[in-house]
Image (cartoon, rainbow, N blue to C red):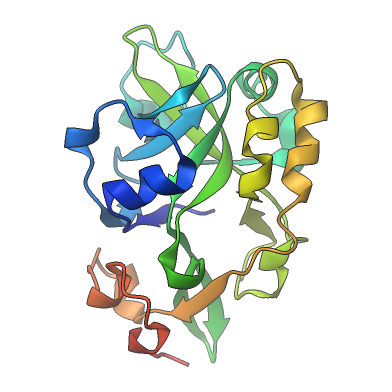
Length: 235
């Protein structure tokens, strides 16, 4: 399960990269550790409106849910959805794949390995901590709020050589395939082709102090610093 992401980019960096403006730019703040176990917001672009970046609560909820986010998340994890296990998932996921795809805009995510009996966290990011998009699905609640889930797949892309104790990985979408992934005229079977272009993406993994698991320590190394050797070395 992937439950921590990172977004250290400035507003101007995000907008320049995705070439889309934020709907509410004044409330954007970089967040080096986005903890999905809390009710956290993530910048998203939805297939319903490619003209703006909005905020989605990480952890997708059914459209007609009347209970609170934390009540639902205590019953089931909707932070991540296994893309190869959708037939066993709730129908609101399968409908979302056809009609409610999105991109989660981040600058990194966290994964782990077991080394000499110890759990070691890693921060995975692009060179120079450039922003990138992760494949996701979303729902729009009756009150207008968006909630979203991160799609994960078996390791077979550029991430397959990166440290990861899990069999699955987040799906990084190549920028040239963003419009294809968000195309309103295509169903999921067509859009899945957009997910096959990440093999050549260059991703970097840096070990982070194991104290990361004890609390949400905001390491100075995670705040947009492009010098990888400043990350706390645990290996």
